[in-house]
Image (cartoon, rainbow, N blue to C red; front, side, top):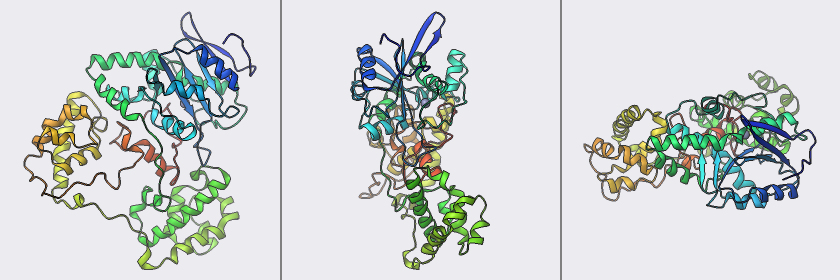
Length: 454
Ligand SMILES: [Zn+2]
């Protein structure tokens, strides 16, 4: 694109490497997007990031798209444009590699908003984790590989506001400007360590990532701490969550900004029947108390009115949970996993999260073929640990005929099932997000910024 145009004050020239200019275009008309995409047609790699506003909004959507090819970057404002269809064609072209840092949430939004299914993905976060790096946030990686220090001042910016300042756009552009170079370094390192096949398998599993709609009637059971409540308190919580969702939707505000989960839990436990009792709950927002106390009390009363027999309960534990040897099997597998993690210098959760060990424990495989039937386990994990897994379970009796393992655990978060190496002990970010910030709708938690190390 030859001409500088559009938003005055939003065009910059950045220096990527000494003597190497890397221009940034701000595109807020369909025509500008078209011209830009024509100019980069034929590219074989594109770095992409999106900005949503889950910290601020009830239903998240894409408020900004940042993209880079090796010589230039652009920011697309989708609000005046709608779906930038040509970009979708590029991202869905299997010949074009699309590089993200932490693709999961971006992929969900891209599918939700535009229906795109991105193919040929490279995720620099997963690559870094598979290399054994413990600081795998984007900021940490850019500092490690390029000595760059990213500014964090707009970390919690509201990307739904307009106009965005030049400063904010400059900040947003940092997310993709160095990603292609970073990808090259990570890929080389993966190959050197013999782990490229691991990464390729993980990246392939990212394709098709999308939101799995949650049942609003049971989402409250997945909130952190719900298992500590009595069934009566759960009934109140259910009503309170439904009330909060209604308000959040109406205000288009993220649920935790309407009322924090801890406050809902406290209200459910206290079973308040008066405004004074509500006011005594720590963290109860004053304005909410002022305007909404009658509705909050009504929600609690509705929970109290539920008949004993109809009180909510957690779904029954699956059959394998009753296997008296189950914990012992998992412990054996864990020993194998932990030793392998030491040998490979990998975080245990990155190497093989607990839910995958449990899947193996349910199957009790006797052969490599049987192990391969455990869908949760990656091929590379089976290669690294499979023989040891089989040996570790040899002392346990095989499953009785007809005692089929369930296809999937009831508690497996659908959203996270495809997300590899999410960090920690494998609790996937997306599901942590939905219980931390919002119950019934997808959300990225406020702390889950690419500038933070997982
Ligand atoms: Zn970003």
